[in-house]
Length: 342
Ligand SMILES: Cc1cc2nc3c(=O)[nH]c(=O)nc-3n(C[C@H](O)[C@H](O)[C@H](O)COP(=O)(O)OP(=O)(O)OC[C@H]3O[C@@H](n4cnc5c(N)ncnc54)[C@H](O)[C@@H]3O)c2cc1C
Image (cartoon, rainbow, N blue to C red; front, top):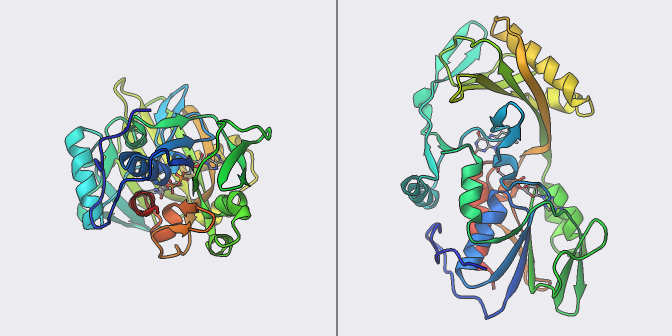
């Protein structure tokens, strides 16, 4: 396994000593938190294997590939609040992993439209948000398409079983980091009672996301719009691809998403497309429309702990639900545990 350059993306402020030789760690979940953790551990000499159920890394900061092009169907952009993360993002900018997003952002509320472009410095992945996950995953042993169903402890080592009760890697691990929404983490880390009560404390909100490609360009001049006054629509982002096609990503409000959780995705996509047409008062015929349900989109009240770690069982948990419900929070959580382990 190639090892990422030691500490290359690391945020400052924590000690990171080398791990013992042959210390094997499994990270379950290749979202930003899991990858940041794995990268930090690998940079300290840990033998890390990352397991991801999806075909691509990134999780909620991923990019969906469709017959109509790529869509950032989770996080469209991210912002920076802490100095530690600022340093990391400066490296990502230098390496070409991310770029500033200077698109016009507005908010609409009744008859009032406000320009929010200057309200924050926003960043996006250079080739979609998946660029960040791809960068973090460089050199890591990443097993995609592998859903972990349970953790089993034998003596001092952990084995991971997939859904067919088979272990995708023989030999076992000295430690396991579970890097996913806390509700899912609680199911997997149920064998570690010390972690479960905290994991169960965090409530989550869902979000339906719809993706559209228009046959004819809308003519709007904004790239993103916060919709403050609509029952179903909370956010709309549009971009023109290299071939001139206009793509939109819509996020539904948490309330509407919650009350339409089990609606078929085609129906959700049609309803959100209709909401877009109504709210922005324009008619269009979509060339493509689809929807994706994020069952665990946003943690309501994060724990305000950087990460969770049970030294007795050597099982940890990281994610945006620890400290902050954004990409930055996910990164700092994973990186923090990676640096502090042992
Ligand atoms: C609609 C939406 C809009 C957002 N907008 C923004 C924004 O504008 N700015 C911002 O900063 N943040 C935004 N966020 C939040 C941001 O995307 C998240 O905070 C961040 O990506 C969370 O990363 P994570 O690693 O903690 O979790 P996740 O991204 O959820 O990663 C968990 C990973 O674990 C995998 N997994 C789960 N269970 C298993 C299993 N049993 N076996 C194997 N793999 C498993 C999942 O497939 C996933 O890849 C948004 C999120 C959503 C959903």
